[in-house]
Image 1 (cartoon, rainbow, N blue to C red):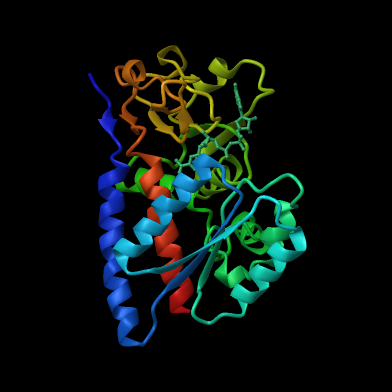
Image 2 (spheres, rainbow, N blue to C red):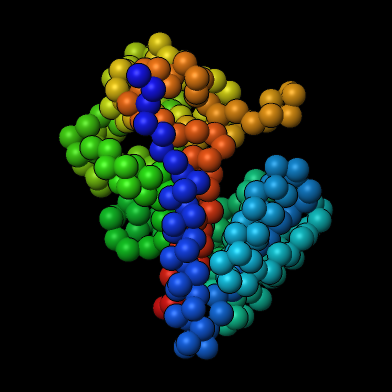
Length: 280
Ligand code: NAD
């Protein structure tokens, strides 16, 4: 039997329509939510992600200001630009598209973004709040995954969750959110000795490694919920996730497609964070 599809595209459309309503409510108070999106250099994938985010802003009535800086920009110049946006009351959110060129210290950049404008949730204050279980901005991709799981009523409490990937933007924050939801969480990574042994334990399996088709059907426990975070560009130009979708579809109980799963939810959570930043 085929897995139930976790349709991020349709849930994200629902979130976007709620965002539009919030934009109208804010307009009555004379507020237009504004997001500054900083893109450093001309990485092709980053450009596509930024375009998708600014389009989603336009469609929902969130004003977006895209700031393109050359790859050669100095760290000081970038930090000064961020300080200007911090001081601009018309811009409620700041997003610095990652990755940054190697001469720039990404943590220093995140440190300078005002925590109350940190709609990506990468400032150490927001990450600290996540560890403590305190209010703060939650990184968009993990937040979007949790929303998808909750919407589909996937049981989490007491279940085993296995995350493949330990990045600071996806794997680690997601592990904290799943812990908060009372799952028993294992985080795997490139040095995990027997990946299949771990993934086969998972009631909820999240693949966030950036390796096309890393998760095969033989690595999935029958009936498990499989979330594919990966976005991989194949040599023929097509997109693939980290999960062998067609084969895993016969084993899993729930499955996210790529595209149309986690990606749209990431953008939807960004918009929600912008509304929250503009509302306070
Ligand atoms: P990253 O490169 O920072 O981290 C990858 C992680 O995977 C690392 O912890 C690494 O140890 C682990 N890993 C790599 N190969 C492995 C293997 N063979 N076995 C086990 N673990 C392995 O990547 P990231 O930024 O977390 O992104 C991961 C993927 O998710 C990428 O494809 C990225 O494009 C995608 N992504 C998608 C969204 C979205 O909105 N859908 C958002 C962020 C990232």
